[in-house]
Amino acid sequence: MHSLFKKIKYKPQLLMVWQNQKEITLQSLHPKYEVIQYHQSLDNQILDLTKGAKFKFNEDTIDKCKSRLIDNGWIVIRIKKNKTIVASGMLLKSIDESISHPIELSWIVTHPAHQGKGLARHLCTQLMIILRQLNYNSCYLKTHDWRLPAISLYLDLGWEPLANSKEAKVRWKRVHRKLVRVNLFRKMENFFSIPS
Figure (cartoon, helix red, strand yellow):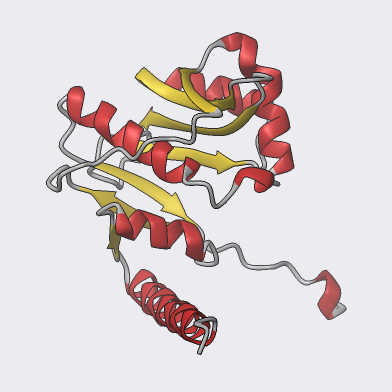
């Protein structure tokens, strides 16, 4: 078989866990945005958002998420002026029996044109506050190795890598090395941008 047609081995997503121990600080959003609870009339906009962010999300995914959603567990951020949804995130009841945490933080997505504005941080923090209000002591999320900006955000918010296998430990070590390089590069970039 030609190498172009060989099956690519799928790697399961890495796991992170939040233990509800650190203080949570909700940073304010830019005034042009507002946070609202998800409702069914937003489905088409949610699909547009996820498509724009290149997430594999469809009507079936929405239905599956609704069946696992906790109370007030799906929030979206939209532009106040035109009501366009630009970010979304949710809390789902876990269906993975191999994970001891009852809730999954899932489908954190920000439209590419609105990334870097603190929307994902605001969504995650708001959802963590909801978890705390509902007396959940822990939560997990799944992420891909290559989502370094997202992993960096989660770490900054107090999430910890869950290395539940030898392979996961190796992959987390690789992610750590990549994050160190990225952060060093940013520091160097800042240094060289300082006027002399």
